[in-house]
Image (cartoon, rainbow, N blue to C red; front, side, top):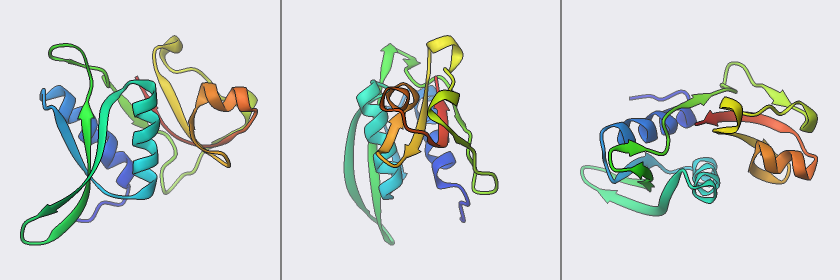
Length: 135
């Protein structure tokens, strides 16, 4: 199976695992996805991150992500939307970064200072590529 947008795939896996009540989600490894996962961990949307090697017919490097729940059965990640896609990149300056769901979500940006939330990017006065919105 060929996945053209691996970050969108990661977001769908997190959302689906939470809706299914799973304790963890497995995502194919990449440095970018690992940095996104660290930003989500810092904001409390996931509980843990671990690099794993799954052995089967082929050996795969994976990221094991612990799903956070507010109350049993209700995942912390209720929705996720990929904003900047491979076919259409979207960028925002520090002053143009908007809130998500009236402040009940976060926007992740890829900035020169690394992956950070919209709020942190505004404080640091840096803009960048809008990766996704999570609420």
